[in-house]
Image (cartoon, rainbow, N blue to C red; front, side, top):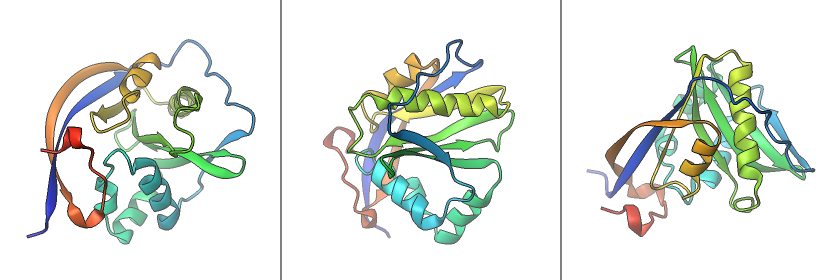
Length: 185
């Protein structure tokens, strides 16, 4: 049996049924967003592992390269990378496999960018990308392992909470993740 660390989180599921009325604020100078034509497995793992390192992002780490490549090749899944000065500064993943709803599967910033004020602006660009694609609704979830500003930022951006659930995860120890004390069971 595989060694695991038990983690308990409260997950908040959020929804948006219409695009925000106001335009997204511009990104700061030197930032740009690039949608990958086809994200490679190593690049995606770099983004996912770096952005999610402090927030117990573990599910995609358990996928084989083949499983992850299949997901990244799906035309209904898109990866968008935030760059600052030519370096990745964050990413978001949009999943339209439950069309006409679009799910913001992953969203986050590289550790060096957290706290700079770019998060809300970047999130609004993610939201606008989903609506520009023709979505009729948008979903996202966050949990108590995520950054403490995640939930308030989603709400500020126009998402509304629709339900909460308490979940227990068995995070494989082999992944080597730092598990914050407040979510350890």
